[in-house]
Length: 99
Image: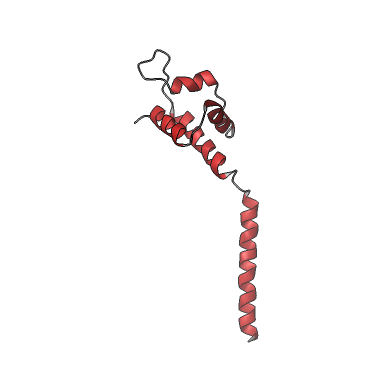
């Protein structure tokens, strides 16, 4: 199975049209035209067939993750969460000492 087959199967599984795939690739700042995209979905014996490279498939998968899950939250939020989590532990220890 090559990258073109994987791209085709993902397109069918997620019911994506060419416009949807182009928008997904734009989420990761990767530009591709409709004609370039359609060349990936042609049969291998077609004269305009183009093999899908690793870079295109990788960017599509990263864009698909953003499309399905949403953008990754900023790392500051995680640090603040860890600080709050740590402060809660201190209050529980101080309560035990009071008893």
